Length: 172
Image (cartoon, rainbow, N blue to C red; front, side, top):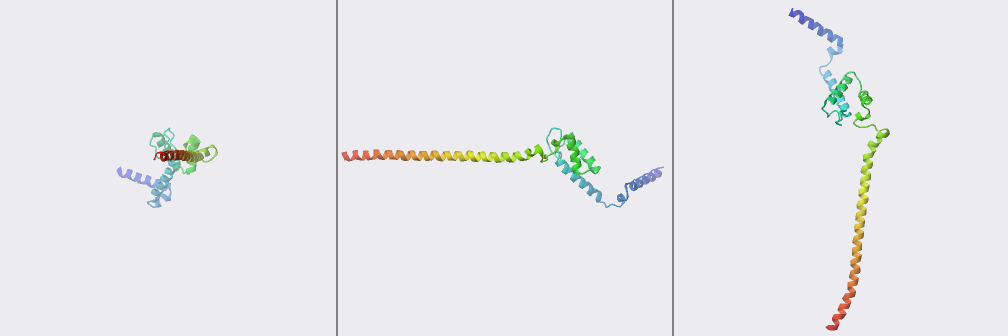
């Protein structure tokens, strides 16, 4: 009885191998591992370009909650069906909209997300430059005013020094 079950299992395994095609029997040992590795790399690239949609705001590859696991399962299922990265990304965009993308596409109103940081940095830098320039300019003006006032005061003192010398000459 056990021998019959073993023969039946062997026959079933051979039939499954032939049904899978001749590539299954004659493929190199590392080929299936290499294909799995390529799929994992592609899966990782897709996960790096998507944001988890449970409200945490994390990139899908870094998030470990149930929503992220569900999204990863969808990615794996679609990769097994032979879909490309663009098709999978398009699927998620069709469900969640552009907010699922880690980087918004540079088109339409989304261009502001790309341009605004650079404009803000440039504007802030110019504001700091002009503020410092004005600050230094007014400091220089104050120093010049003080120097001129000091020179005028010195001129006024020279007049008194002459009077003092004249008075001293009278008594000496």
